[in-house]
Amino acid sequence: MLFRKFMTAIFAISALAGQAQEKQFSIIPEPAEITVAGEGTVQIERGMLVRVSDSSLVASADFLADYTNRYLGIPLRVDVPKKGKKRTADKAVNGIVLVNRNNGEVSGGYRLEVIPGTGIRIEGNDAAGVFYGVQTLIQMLPVRAGVLPILAAAKVVDYPRFAYRGMHLDVVRHFFPVEFIKKYIDYLALHKLNYFHWHLTDDQAWRVEMKCRPELTAKGSVREGEIEGLYPGKYQPLPYGGYYTHEDVREVVRYAAERYITVIPEIDIPGHCMAVLATYPQFSTTPDEPKKCALTWGIFNKFNNVLAPKPEVFDFLKDVFSELCDLFPGQYIHVGGDECAKRWWQESEQTQRFMRDHGLADEKALQSYFIHYVQDVVNAKGKTLVGWDEILEGGISEDCIIMNWRRPNYGVKALKTGHRAIFACSAWSYFNMKESRTQSEIGPRGPLSLEKVYDFQIVPDSLTDRQTELIWGAQGCLWTEYIPTTWKVEFSLFPRMAALAENVWSPVEKKSWDNFSRKVEMQCERYELWGARYSDAFFRLQDIVRKR
Ligand code: ACM
Image 1 (cartoon, rainbow, N blue to C red):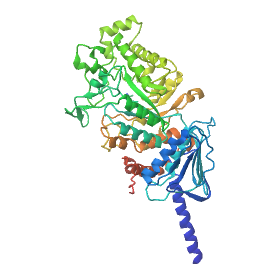
Image 2 (tube, rainbow, N blue to C red; image 1 turned 135 degrees about the horizontal axis):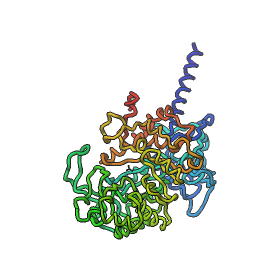
Image 3 (cartoon, protein in one colour; image 1 turned 45 degrees about the vertical axis):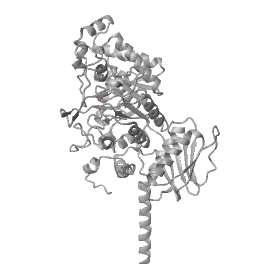
Image 4 (cartoon, rainbow, N blue to C red; image 1 turned 90 degrees about the vertical axis):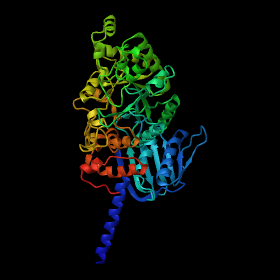
């Protein structure tokens, strides 16, 4: 009897320990290796010291301290090294130590150890690796304030699968203030994503200040009205506008850089340009018909008017892309290039003459002429051009990066013609699609379930090794025609962004829907901790009632 009681107690304790361990290791994206390292624990306590090996890691230490303080009510003390001084950071006892090994191994890789009696040690292959180790530590913490953060002895060894792990946001169809853009960047960081693709211009608005052309935002950032509800919807004569100043951009870029995120700005040409044409109708193929050059409302229309090939248009492109290159310090500039309605060029005598004069055989060649022109401007600034997969039409030089939004065969074509490619195929990566058939909060398209996002095969079959190497990574996109509010942004993103994150970060052998779907519950508790909205479609599809 006594023996049975004793055994029951042992089982109960180990079941609890197992549960705690499952919680401690409910990490998304799944790390490459997790080892439970024997007995003992480390508790993160109020005022615990965070020491860094050099000042470049202070931002990562601050990120951690801000998180534990804001969400768990546990302030930490960041020990800032004296300017220019390096220290080994080895002496800290019972603290958190961040070390940049700078060892030339895979960028973003790190080791994290929970060492009883000593504390927590994160060693990155580089500074980005330390930051990702911090994100893993954050995910080992409780998802509720008040639960003591007691971590079992463990070792995590981890590194990213792809160098490009991106997320896009359309701020044109609906505008979001800088404070929310920073929050969005935090969401990327917390999922170990490292590129923010900022879609800044389109048919509905121009949303970035251009000192060289102030009219673009004076006129092109405000539309007369909105439509409410699903297309064709109900017109509301409610002026709608907003744009980012140079100062705003610099603030966003700085904030992103502290989180090891590069911002890629997109100015979409030669289609999706109604905001330019509303400002400068003379740049269109129909300068005498202003009605054909007006900003459109909230809804996408792939038959909209486009830029005409005129000297003043090429001067304009040179000015704005040069300014964009100077404003954004990152290496990459996105030219758009998608869904250019060629019929405007076919119907324009001036355009047809231009094509004949320049030996352009068809409208695809003209599209290519525009893209080449911008590429020269961007290359002259030492930067690299990225464009949607249509930029392959009519030919484009190898050093342009192709962002594949249509079916994956366009990405494969890019790889086969020697281009680096980012897979953002709409069927798996457009989070503006509703998540389940019956979901009404997002938009009419879809469904795109969590499992489908997770299942996206980023590396297509039957590629050569060289072609596989050219796959730079993958990206999720959020088009905001039907997403006017920040809560809808969050609701559309979560938890599907977690599936994207695991798909682009974790080693392919670690990919397991069963394991991932077990972790989603806790991930959603994290979203609750952050005060972020998320969709519960996954739980409904699985017929699981979320515990609160
Ligand atoms: C796109 O969805 N037109 C890139």
